[in-house]
Image (cartoon, rainbow, N blue to C red; front, side, top):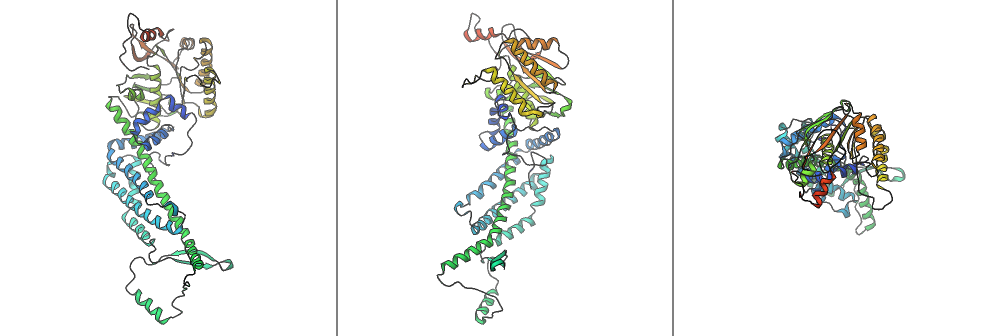
Length: 520
């Protein structure tokens, strides 16, 4: 039995290796802020959120499956919280009843397993009560399948049967083990036999009394240990433990499977509760969010309204400035314009909208639709190498080479590459030529490229030969130097208005420019 709230046919995997370039994606899109908002102080939710965000789905149907579960979670948040709390308690309570120094002892293993199973049966009953009480309020395939499975597999008759087996494991009446003689007259094929548990049958005392009095050999064969024979007592105890070993192993495996179920349920509900936490934070800021429409890669579509960077909004606790994107069937989007005009912020907003959509979450926009990208890749500028082993351009080219070679055929048609001021560590002419060759090769391979750049030669050459396959956006600047943080279609400019920054930082007779929104 598995929850299967994240995937239709498998569990969420928290221990598998992360895909290539995951750490760079985490850094470039500033996912640390997003994870912190989703966790809301819960370390386990942070771990799950970070893991899932770095493994986006690449199938529109799988994304739709997860989106439907999220809608149920938004409509029934208290039930999801109850499931999360129950799963966590079911995992933690057995730990408190464990004595690690006796864990390898078969007799202890059976007794410990009995206590753990008693706790887990209580958890199963609580889980079934949740399914029976709230199951009809859920409509997604994930939840309806889970609740139907709980009602079927955890019916009262089955739980009562489990409890009766658990009661026999008390071993109050002693241990009855059968065996046959094997090679060398050694015991083989040991089997733990069931025997009565609890108070003896009313007539058992009479039968035992008659046996003692009549001493009939055909009633049973018995052997009594000689007094103070410690060696024989140890051998008998070892024989008893060998008879319990197999039972202890089976019980341990059963408990492991049950705890795996509750572990998966805890992880999967943790992710959706993280999504609800993020939604609540954005709602407090008055930021828009929508359930995006995932499309097949072959459709080559990517457009949205009021796109914004949720990490910037969360860090500044400000209502974000949104932008529109109309990049359907565009191979290249070139973003130019004034410094601190919102270009990098816009680039992150596109990447985060795509990533959150492919994780089955809402997008930071009032509307968003996009083709699913087999890979979401970033190449942002970095600080100078502190070891001074290589120059900045060498470092950029090495990362680009690593990016392409690591992905290999994975960086295929439909993938999304976000470039942020790449190849600007050299002169204008050389940087433009490097950018031109790399971008051309990637777009010809079917990769959609978003490029924030100050390389005017590169931008102008592409603009002059532009066709419907390229889109050019420019960060807006008013005549007085004020940035609006809006990006509109427009030809690249020969300046990024660095003089405005000089006046703002060092001041002049005009005073620093007044800016009416968040900067980036």
